[in-house]
Image 1 (cartoon, rainbow, N blue to C red):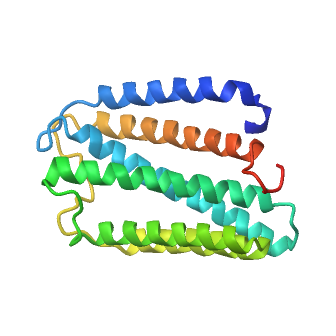
Image 2 (cartoon, rainbow, N blue to C red; image 1 turned 45 degrees about the vertical axis):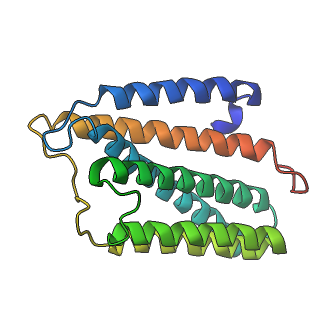
Amino acid sequence: MLQRIPIRHLPRILAALAVLAAAVVWAIPPEAKLGGAIRIVLLHGALARTGIVMLGLAAMAGAVMLILRGDRFTALNRTLQTTALWTWVVYAVSSVVATWITWGVPVAWDEPRTQASAKILAMVVVFFLVTRRIGQPLLLAFANLVAGLAAFLLIRNAGAVQHPLNAVMGANAAIFPILFITLWGILVAMALLVARWIHVRPAPGSDAA
């Protein structure tokens, strides 16, 4: 489906989705405890889940490449690795903003989820640099598989100190899941379109898509 979208239309589609995402964030009503800060909190949560989705897709691409033992999926693995990396970077920035607004500190190192997110960020950055440096396709596939599985396990097993398992505690909570899922869907669509753009416009020296 994404391959049918002409490359020249991607910037306009991405811009339209960004405006739509901003509108959804703006439509989120104040919450009983967090007030208007719930907007950045839900955006932060949607970005986290988008990052996990992209890491999961990269892991699946890596698994396919390891099983089939071919170079056909090298460009796809590079694309998904790059997209997952930048998605997680954007999530990390949103985490700093959300933590500052809600807790008054830029990074809450005592939070297990913060530690898990930092470990994932360090891991994906190191894997990205190492695989680009070595340039071995199967190593890239293995790195993507390990990163996806490790990220899932780190987030799944991370506990919480102050970080709420459910930030939606207001009386009008019924609307929050709808807006959150809508926002998450838009962000995933944007990440996939970015992946499409990277895939058809590979970095210098990389294989053509």
